[in-house]
Length: 107
Image 1 (tube, rainbow, N blue to C red):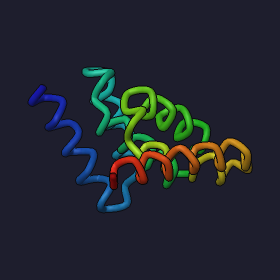
Image 2: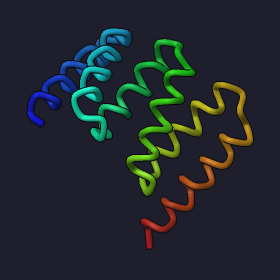
Image 3: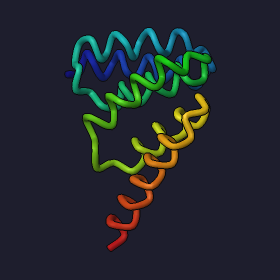
């Protein structure tokens, strides 16, 4: 797991420097090493979104939601990508899920 974290951290270093393709490559290596590493799926979705690959970002965000169905931010990220792709009903559905999860967490 420490190798996966190191790869993820390398991706983060690229991401903060706006080197999104390099970041995505690192996150891909991380999820290949550990397909259940949610942080890497989140990073991959964000890097691909910033790099303009909305289809790839959508697939990564969907995987993140599969791994963390009760995480509001995962649904929010998916909602934003759906919105950018013009998939408004899907975006609204994911936004509603995120809002419900946030409200449940505040109880």
